Amino acid sequence: NAGVTQTPKFQVLKTGQSMTLQCAQDMNHNSMYWYRQDPGMGLRLIYYSASEGTTDKGEVPNGYNVSRLNKREFSLRLESAAPSQTSVYFCASSNSGINNEQFFGPGTRLTVL
Amino acid sequence: GIQVEQSPPDLILQEGANSTLRCNFSDSVNNLQWFHQNPWGQLINLFYIPSGTKQNGRLSATTVATERYSLLYISSSQTTDSGVYFCAVVNNNDMRFGAGTRLTVKP
Image 1 (cartoon, rainbow over the protein chains, first blue to last red):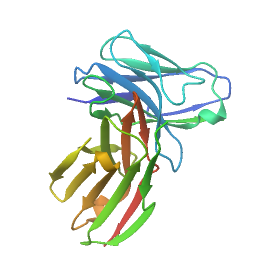
Image 2 (image 1 turned 45 degrees about the vertical axis):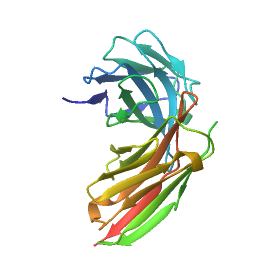
Image 3 (image 1 turned 120 degrees about the vertical axis):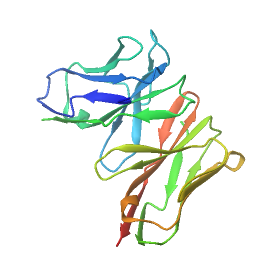
């Protein structure tokens, strides 16, 4: 069991470029999440998907879009990257709903120049 | 949204010492988790503990939901315990993290 995997591990973008961060889980979980972590801070929820076919905004959704491709995969897209989106992005999953224990991937470190 | 405060913000210990980390929250919660973020940035699940007490080896945690706080105890600390400890809570379908306690254990 790989748990939660994320690609890429590192990425550098120029302002205005777009990219998609990929996340997959092999724990047969229903719910998946995207967070960002800025230096010296805790994580903040961007979007989550309680179940396949649903997505909801979290605390900081502006500038991002998500797609729940299937039960295993949940992607995060930056349409026009900005320096303020420089951060470490974590994907997580839980069995069923945000009230259950969440398990995190290794993170993607994104720098926007 | 719910406020989550962790204390102390920084803690330096000598190997073998014990410590208590605190997490206060401003509203009722449906979920509370403790994580350890190691120096490589990986988030490791320590406890899922919306209420009650749990123990896992040298670590234990207690959540008193009615009084809106949780405590993480680390006994006989080791250098590998170094890193940042986060408390995260769920209220109204929203998960919020505290700012963390940075622990440094010196040999």
